[in-house]
Length: 495
Ligand code: BES
Ligand code: MN
Ligand code: ZN
Image 1 (spheres, rainbow, N blue to C red):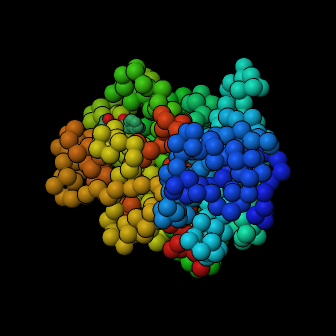
Image 2 (cartoon, rainbow, N blue to C red):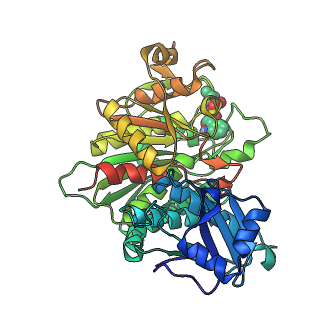
């Protein structure tokens, strides 16, 4: 969908989105449209008891196409994030209608009708939300009928701040590209997306100036990555580690680093998962997809920061060469791990990826993302992403970015009582503890591979996939975390 910004005036074609304040009050241009339509909007509002309550909508058919009335409430809730969600909801309503174009009357809603400072950014965020909602993954649908496809091709936000809004949108458009790439990767089935084919997809980022390095199994063996390699050894598909670098900051500035779990398919291995729902495990590479999408967003908007992205790509399969429960592997850190459950594989991949990242790049901080535990879904559902941090300042930056970007997070505890539950009788640690507190003991396991540097672990098990559309996220792969981490980088690490 094309996005445009133009001067505020009544459009002459396409769908029109009109804001309505509490009590059914139209803003000046909305009122002019109502008059032009012979009072159609007022009559429809009355007939349907539409009073402009916040986020309520009413579709009416006008002369040029759909008129979508959108409730603004008393206007007090309208901020940047609200506007983004409104944009998504608007597109959710209009996408299925027959209009090729839609225009949003972005009228000042303040009491005195005066324009306010944040309007340009809010208009840009509205368009961003709308764009995010248009995402579809239908490449494997060969029998779609034309009438079932969305016809909307263009969204124009009509605002007094059009030039400023357009400028603000440029960066957001790059973020949307990153979110879309993450969604694409998460949605791909595992017969198409496996470590080597995934690597090729990542290599496409070099067009944007991202530097890419790939470690194959031989190189990883040489580095001693026995934890990661053990996970992949039961698969016909070779494992890979991909390192992405975006050097947009000052030359001497230490980088920041993002690390992702990229289990392209998780059968559980010899500790095989039950059949029901196993297809979901194609998105067990969701953490890595967020890292790749983030790198795309940062490069796309030429972020002024030095950023490393590292993803460990493996497939967890149970063949004759597969790792067994009871095996002991040696990680790159030198620490040994007793494999209790081959289905606790994500932490093994991350153990080597985290160690490699801090060892080689000495980053300012390290943040990993992983669809790591079912226990995290039990704890927080699909609303908040649970995160763990060894550093309050870094946790605070993440929480602030979360409020701005609208991707919700909730801090979880670490602690020695949990950590010791991962001690092993035969090795330095085991890869699975008791059932209770499963997401916390998993985080404690990871912490054993983090030296003295600020670190965050985000368990996105509940976030990577949605079974129900929300305002800016259609159902399916969500690309969760790209917006949040882009905001965190932008707010704190760009000169
Ligand atoms: N990829 C799964 C976790 C998962 C489950 C993510 C469902 C999203 C939806 C992970 O590799 C796993 O299997 N974890 C086990 C760990 C256990 C064996 C200690 C789990 O959560 O049951
Ligand atoms: Mn698993
Ligand atoms: Zn897994």
